[in-house]
Length: 259
Image 1 (cartoon, helix red, strand yellow):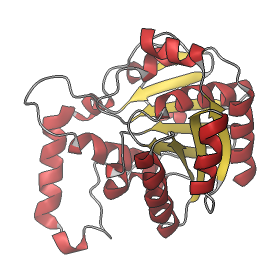
Image 2: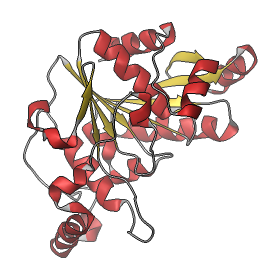
Image 3: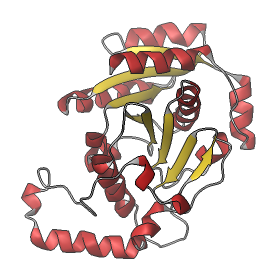
């Protein structure tokens, strides 16, 4: 199963990705976490791992990937982009095909980072988005394997078509007007591509939980994670998250039942 985690910036996508990955590993799944956020430098710390080398370097780096993209544009009618998305490669991959030098591993979890922005003026993140989509479209997963994709903030990845290669979408919603409105947009776009969509509330307390549930009345809310001082402290200091939250276990169970 391939699960994509999305939501507003700061909503807790990486926190949920990390905790969900650990919950799935406890259930004896082989877990691959794919970091597709070019500006996130905290996910690996929450997993207690070193940040692996950018996977895009396996394909020659950003410049060579851009050249492949330009070649694609020469041969494809821009009006047909929706039906003929950009591809970097066509071959199928399994967990065992991923090059070890671009992975870090700990406690049954593997981490792969598509690519990061490292320097001023190096260009946009478009090549990383293309690679993320191509990999997810071509990644074969067995019944005992789970892929968790931590995305960049907002909905640009929907425009790139990254969600198409996943089985389920999990949107993290924090107690803010912007996050609640974004949830509705995510729900609409996900239903258009026929994927299962789940929502989890994050940083909730007794007061805002009721308001959020009322606002999300028609959406598939499968869990709520309370505001947690230990999570906040670990996030601030860049420490590994080692919390066994019942809410995360219930979230994992709900997603597995739905697929």
